[in-house]
Image 1 (cartoon, rainbow, N blue to C red):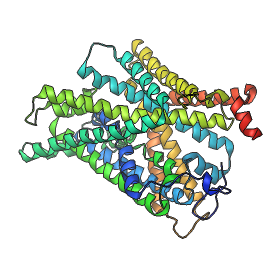
Image 2: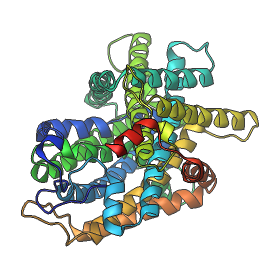
Image 3: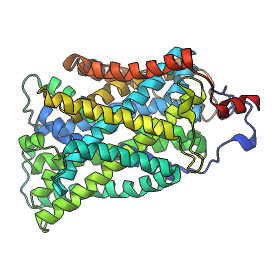
Image 4: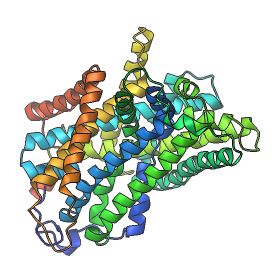
Length: 471
């Protein structure tokens, strides 16, 4: 990783021709963050969150976005110092200078992306069944992942264009739910007492923590914005406002959607549904035939899930490609297709890992273990992501007095300490409540370790890597 100068975080030794073009304005960055956070987590997991808490499950989304926003402040400070496309791995490397720790953070992020894609693919199958219930859910999930890998293989430009178009569709779906809520309240049918009901067994505080742990899956994604810092105009000013503003806007939308679901549909119905937001549409509150509305919303939800999963698949292949270029994993992951210019080996491997997770979940279900694949993989994603967030905040605190300049953003230290506590509380709760999640985490991390060992003992540079070194 490049050394950083104190002047605007420019990579040392980088000439004008070696820099990425700064073309992303503050407004564009705001919508990039908003679209990233408004992913498909709420389409997939809102039923599970409702089941964990009761009618007050909207609070889980409010608390979750608050903790995530505090974490975002750490990213905002670090980006203004080091506006490079490297994210958490760069910050940890700067703060601790430990290659093993940096590698662990990178593999953890990759593993979280694998788990998220598996959870989303299963959620896609649930909504697909509303349109056509004949194909087996496992087959739909597998085909879904393979098709997204093909889109990535065709080219990154096509992937980005598809991502932009699908963002508008997923926002439209959430706006539809909000309109249903407004109409329902305007009719005078809403029982607002539902919003403070804790129906789960045990202490309401523990129920809320359980709900936040699940809802946190919907808050992840904002960290991807750090990877476009090098292409942002005046990141020291625009990035903090765009990041925090985008997350707050997303949080408001999530809370309104959750409130609408709680008011219009019985909590048990939401908890028992594999496509919980669709239950809101099926209530027939809008003057449109329920069958038509259900079909339209199912398609919208599938587009939203496709959007988020597409970003995950892009991220997976690029991480593997970058690690191969650094001789961390076997060099064949750096192979680029001659005509499509896509990292095809990394794409194939990433798709195989996600499909493997789906197959393992299906096998456990057949063995009557009773694994909810969506919930299981989302919890694995949360565990790994929370660990990364703690490391990013610690890195921010450690680098507090380094590489500052006149336009550096400085996050509130009390809030950062509160963020560490919040992330750790959620992390400990998830691990204690579901220790088997650690087995899945360990399996994904072990896969990364196995690739590292394979490169260490048997790796040889690819021909293009040798050419680069000789040049």
